[in-house]
Amino acid sequence: MDTNKISGEMEKIKKRNARVEADKAWETSGTRRVIIAAATYATITLFLLYINTPGPFVVALVPTIGYLLSTLTMPVLKKWWLNRSYKKRPR
Image 1 (cartoon, rainbow, N blue to C red):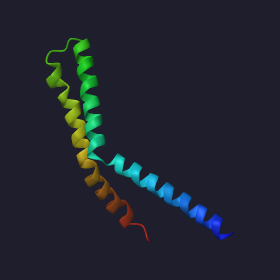
Image 2: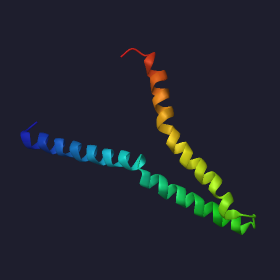
Image 3: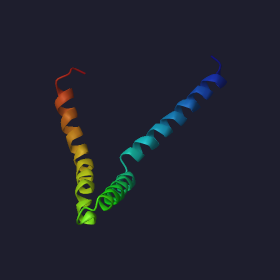
Image 4: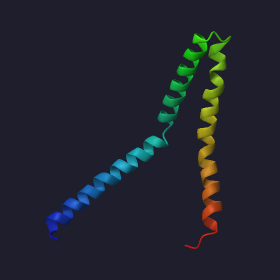
């Protein structure tokens, strides 16, 4: 391989790594959680209004808060799972 080809391959790898890091940052961002929570709340509220449920604005908070709580506990559960699962395996 010549130097130009190696440099080109390294640039491709750097771009891919930057894209993967950006995707990971988005997956764990608070902005993403808020957008999903807002979309969840709006969708459920509209459905509850459509079926004439009493107190749709308050009732729609239940699954929305449930979603937010689940996203807050995931890092803790992930850490617990990783420690439990990979402690047994030789490295």
